[in-house]
Length: 239
Image (tube, rainbow, N blue to C red; front, side, top):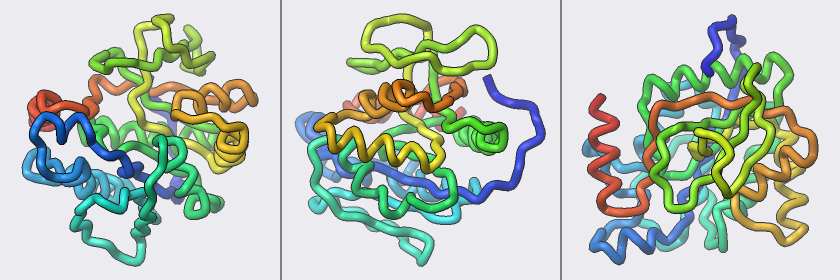
């Protein structure tokens, strides 16, 4: 699903949602806050910031829970927003003032682990999708290891997304990697004002409001929800 077309140099922001409590990890004996869980000796949060900077970030914005203990090397190109929110969608909303620029942005949660080189190809494809007039490029995968996956229905041609569903409707599920233009932030605002929650409902609202979204396939993405996921992520990153 990746693009081989000529890409354009588009300035871009990145955002990380790291405001969850990490309850399941702590119940299983992990004593550090989730953003500081190490994969390959590198804390999750620091790993993402490094990867984003390697892929041309003009600015990185992080939603971090007040109780999190994170030693993130901040610069003038990094903004941390401390917040305690009921859902990842609400944490995303807290980042909205820092994303309302002319630049498109890529958003992910702090516990999303992927292969670095695949992400670099995804970034190129996102820049191309923006240049082609799409509103977003959503990461998907056919590797399903989530307790409640969000299935993504994709057109046979063009890789355009038709919808997001709780029940199986395709071999692909959301990878939790969202490349979006800033018009998506208006949809986010309406979702919050309507009392909605959860990122999957935001994604459905994008389709409902007529946003043009494409899919890009990652081979495998690991969410760090349990201790057993750490070993899976270590193995993935070693490839």
